[in-house]
Length: 130
Image 1: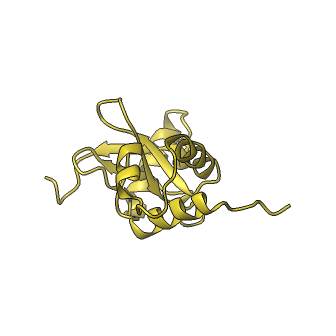
Image 2: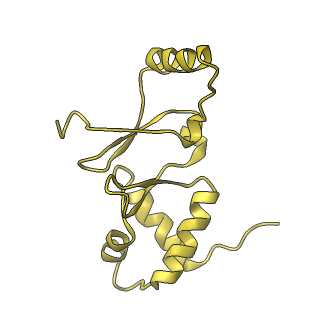
């Protein structure tokens, strides 16, 4: 059964697709949405939860632990990649070094630990913010 896409969800998805390099808090999203497409805070929360479950958005927690941050990251392009999040600018990116990724996976496997790459976000500082 095909799921119905509301105008609110389409507006949110368009917002994230147009701003793929950035992470957003709920307040950032409200400020960034076009005024002609008002969406209530509760509708934003509902839609974000659904979009995270559908693997369209990646949800992380701000370094203070107080805010959830969301970024467009459709699973079909990044499900099995380790993610890096800059704690200064909030940008989420992929670990682009396959050798480093496999070294980390091998190190963890040697210690009897299997990494859930889909849910893993390493936090640090990107080269632009250093």
